[in-house]
Image (cartoon, rainbow, N blue to C red):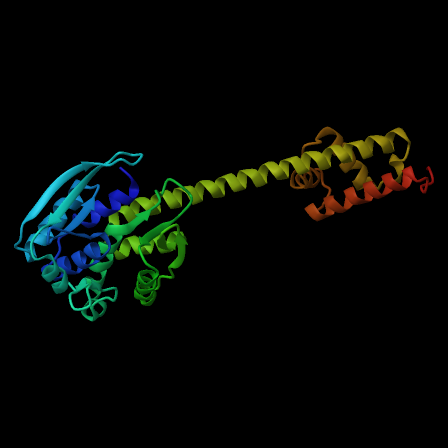
Length: 318
């Protein structure tokens, strides 16, 4: 089962008041419902790939609708070939939709704007948004680092209404057109997590956050390992370069140009080409040579300077 389907089934597992059921159905039917008219008979068709969601929808509808409800199971022809649970209302559907502020019988069209009473009541607004998400929403699995939650609307106006609905709650949904759909989406992990909280999916939030934190921690560990490997490589490269310079100075009898500290450090470097400046600092201090890590660095700079001068013939041999 996909993470998005987990979220949707968690939402419908909660207890809803009758007013919340109505708000939920308003959001779900508005963007999932399909009206078919044939032989002077109108039908409202609702569909989902989740048996649990289908049973919840039927239960909610029966609270407000006394007409006939048909239930059918279809085999999807899409790649995953999921079963599709289809719920069909066959009696007085326009009256039912009008009562839910979904369809305007006078203007013969769907109502895009949200009922003012829903906007003023947080619990009803959350139920409405939950219905919309279950109808047309999806969210990437927390297993992937590509955080993405989206809702696919059939018209551009609906994306604007949805965006304006969520803005007062602190969400900044972006919109794009994808083929024939208008998509509202968020990509920030914190925004995805907050939206899952909004639609009352706490278990999914926990799963999402655990995976996100685990991934971020692993990324930080990998980053530190990469930094450590890089630093080791730089240390080995610098050590080998310094060994080459010291051996050259010894071979060409320029070693006497170094100070006592530098000569001691140079000999230690020949013994420990892989040692870091911190390790060399400790060795020198343990041998009663007071020095800091920056002091070690300065001594190697002096060794390098004498090495370069000796190659250019600027040093006078002692």
